[in-house]
Image: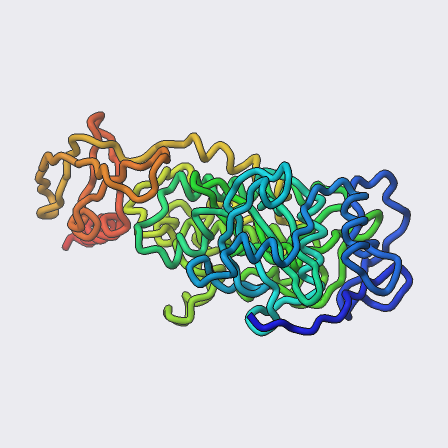
Length: 450
């Protein structure tokens, strides 16, 4: 990997010029007494930040990050070998590695992910690298990825994280060849991500994530959620401030409309982005997909009108779920997404309210039953035919250790042929849109005397 020349990182202090033409707080008055975390703007009081100053600043804030050398991380990744290469993200290439107490006394043996800041590969730079170290060096939560340490030596800038073996939500939703994520797993991921954002918004001072999207949601082997990539994170408004004004950054399809239009950033900007990801979890569709028909290319524009209508929600739900989801839970999640995606930021819920609304979904299990089911087939206008069949369990599934690993697949004829599914108690278990249309047509013809 080619070495690059680096300029010292320049910090902006209060009263100085705008920070890299980036942000300032509107209507800020008063001070934030007793803050357990220093704002990013106060990281240094001089114009440059040396490795020693960064280490002292982090130590003063209670951080326990390890300051690794380039030689140590080269050894941990087998000289950044091709076999350990995981991909290239916003910072640059990412490598899998391993650390233990032979590298640093007291360091637990574990797999790690090492991100190497490379301006030729990535899209982020010095400021984003420092923001990542600063925020994750001070903030700890079970739904934030754990930053173990960093390397700030000569031209080298690296970040060392806990290794997330299941990869990103984006890969599971849109790029997986191992089958669809089950419903309960999707809701578990949504609740975990919501808790991570709620923690950030409740920090003192608050943190606005600013780049919440499926690719920044990492998963461990049990599909626990961890938010990653804090390079674009910002300190939120404090005191009487209503928002932070900043140049527009983030990802198309996830950014809140008022942020795009005005550059005004609030916690409700993150809430909108969460609504987009929740909609992706419900639909299995990407926020922007140019391969779809023009009216369906923007997911929010197409799907939001259906979210608060239970009779239309099936048009949004991911077909790869094969009907295996809680109807009540889907309606609750859809309504949460609808509110998060409001054009008016004040109408959006807080992330604490989102968590409170979504947590009960994890216990909603009104799925189609496994066992004998009677298909009532409309043969003629006034005749029906009952056919009893057995619905078999599908024992093989790629996502194990989850509540809904047994997924049932109903015949395609049940979807397209207008078939009513009855459970053992005689109640209708499923009622397709196709059948509704057929019944409306039959009723119309009866009324017309046809």
